[in-house]
Image 1: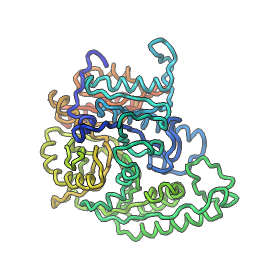
Image 2: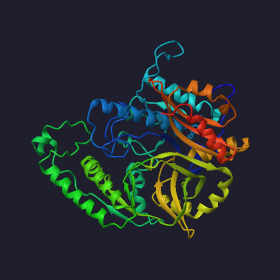
Image 3: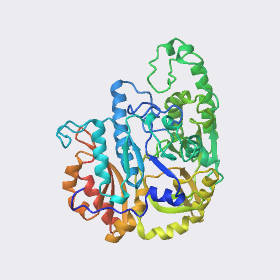
Image 4: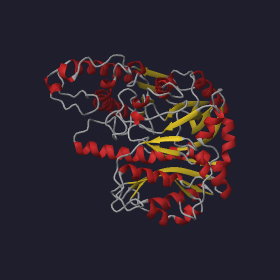
Length: 502
């Protein structure tokens, strides 16, 4: 933190909200995600029970070790580096568990004693620098663990992970990991009884009938490094016969559903795994994805530990055709079933439905809180009936008749949560009514960015809520940018993008 940088005071932290919910509980926040296709880092084992569909994890099999390493590095930087910092920024004075992303520091970067930095120290220093702008009383207790399986809890502490993790399931949790995983699924929303579009659920209730060794000659020759033994076209045994039966059944469901429709994978984040189907051409494209990429990779991941959790299910949803507005709403469900409103924002999505960020207008928040009150209360009552308390994000569509439809339910901290807690004490007192959260890869380090954007940072217009610098000279970051109005906000974002977005 530069001596001229403003100190950040959040209106609420996750720690204060958990304390409000239950003053007697001690919660440890774990903002980590494990891939089910590759092990990202030694400290975080691959997920074989709690399968999550990440970018790259639903694509065709990885064809080389170079490709695998590139995917691992990219995911480690963006997920274990930048994303975990952003969530830690909102945590407050509580233990926040992080792991080493295993990314070397830039050449020439050394510790204070001039020693070479380890990858873990590099990650720790970057995270500490990010949260150093927070008021001392709101800074999280960052804890980098060398092996997540050896995490120690003390004196009644309970875990609140962003998503359930295989390596932590034996430790005490605020909510049973299996129940949390079920609530995070798109299937849970479809069955919740909330006001959501009608859905057709395609479950897969059987497991792969044979191992690679027991299947056929081509399978016995297959390199068993690609997830849980992807079923390839060369298979001539019971594994592929089973896959073809299940694929035919899924495609029949898909073709029987009227268009337009939305296909959702069971466990997704950031728009990954959500497919609009409006035309016959888009239907063919989605069918090809299911047949060639998704089912051959993910059906074999159904195993005795997770079959009852339906990790590979597909959800076909009707579309709200007469939508007039879409909002992402963040709130915190208290232990008594009541809730605390955080924010209502606009999602920024790519043409491919990939999450790019979010924007907020602070002068609108009181009216939006009132508008969403009934929906938030119904969601809170549903989650309370399932014993959940903690942060929640929902996507809500309003139609021309004023009806509100819940089209997504994220039973975890949402990325846009941070916009809501930066308004009252930071942007609004500076006359800035709007702000946006953006995710960028930049061709520079934090120090150079600070020099080029020094005035905007000192004025409080730019808040670095995550920054992870690679040894390659590029950085992955999450920035919150504020301005007096929408036009000025666009200009501030353009100023950042002109620096050199990768």
